Length: 417
Image (cartoon, rainbow, N blue to C red; front, side, top):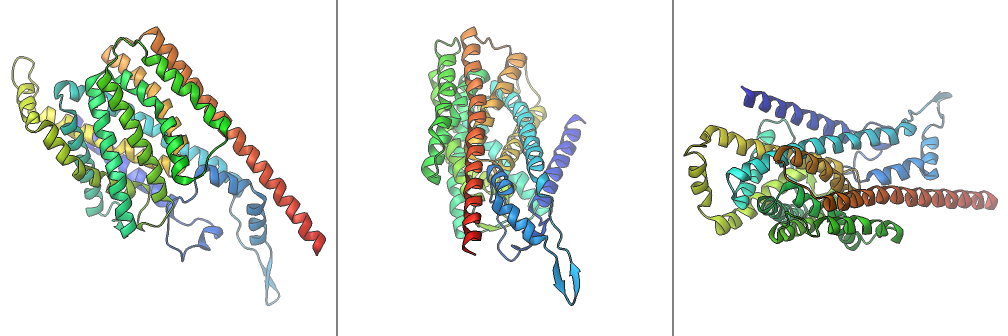
């Protein structure tokens, strides 16, 4: 009964996300209708770019020009003007909702996943199965017409396989790290992701932020390093697998962002992009699971379902399916967040998310966390906050400079006339 209720909740959540995506993708203003003839690209502007567009004098001029009274046969007709002033608040609320839902789903997934790995310590095979469950879930949504079926271009297929490689490898590295050590330790190391994301996004996009913004990542890296130093639960395997997952997921976010900002096929919004990436990563991970663990899953399954502390096979199947669905849904919501923010901003949000995961894991699994780990984590979290404030400061400074330049250009144009 509980499992049925859970399935209903998942369906409701999926429908909600689909509705949000449909509303977000539909043209809702005069400005968007001007571009209907062009192929739809989901959220080509990040939140930072949207804020810049809304607040820039050029955007204000465009809105004013749309609101000018047009004469036709002596009659005047006003053109509807979108509420530009509310755009910033709506964007913030939407992004806040995505991040909040992502955090909640991810905390649940990490706890369920660790419990599953404690019963079946076959991380590569379990991780691959979870990807397969996510891919099957996405295919069912397409088959039942609950979500529009995507049609990829040649470039879209190339991006899907590339991102699938990063997503699949990142998933397997994370699973091995979680299996080799406590949840709290893995997520302390994975808090370094903003550093990887900042470097990779700069190299790929060729757009670098101010040096002062990058400097704020130093306490993030330093705090994590201090937290890991002499940690009682330290594991080199868990450490290096977590570091490898940082690299893979940073590449996943940056390359996914390029797919979101270019035309790669029909119905290719954020959730469908993640769906095709999941399916690609599943097929790519099958050889790794067969080579690394072969028939280990069957052996561990038989051991878990027999003996004094045996678990019913049906309960174990439900645990595997549930963990796979939560893995898919939490990453799907993460893609919705990524479609609205810069990859580095997402990585910083990811670091904040790990605090909730660490607290939850300590409460559930009673894993000891040293004072040093706590101090290091606090330093890292403070660095995340400093990054956010510094980045926002320089973005506002650039907007002010752009506004001043636009006004000066306008004055020069009037003088010439």
